[in-house]
Image: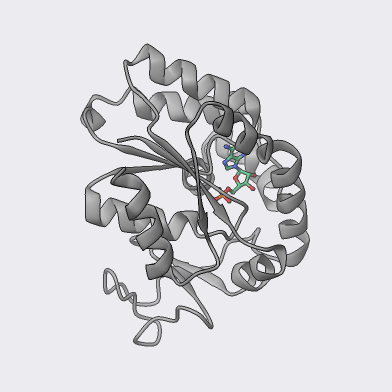
Length: 217
Ligand code: AMP
């Protein structure tokens, strides 16, 4: 099964993707994670996108479509279900994803819109931190680690990072990009009969329950 998690920054796409990977053996394809990896390994592309990402703007369609194409062409991932997380973010990316899936004989099964109100996003994003070893996502107030400085998921010690773009200025730009460029995808996938919605403001377990219910349809 191939799904898209659609929602503004901070809606919980990464958190729910990690859960689906652990519970359903799916593959998370997060263009944000791929771009951050390119930056930290210092590739030419990584250097090119760094300032754009820090400001909260979108990188070009060409770059992210290329990254997804590479993953979908990876024979090691054959037969796995994909979770598209943070992709597509523009109509051009949505068209390109459709064409890529078609060319590989794959299908999109669900597009799940995670709805969260804007005030909640600011609070969520500004307290967020991630384990750089396994990618588990935490929050200062709503989801702290059980043991100080130790990842609950993989046990890594003092491996936490905070994203450079998780600040209020950058978030404002990211939200604008979401409403301007990405929110038209809601109508796009509704018209294709693929759209489902969940209340992203619920607890992690409540959101997980709603998503699971959709995936069993
Ligand atoms: P994310 O981790 O999904 O919030 O992405 C972090 C940043 O990476 C975004 O603010 C953009 O600068 C860039 N990015 C990630 N995915 C895309 C995409 N599909 N299209 C354009 N830019 C993207």
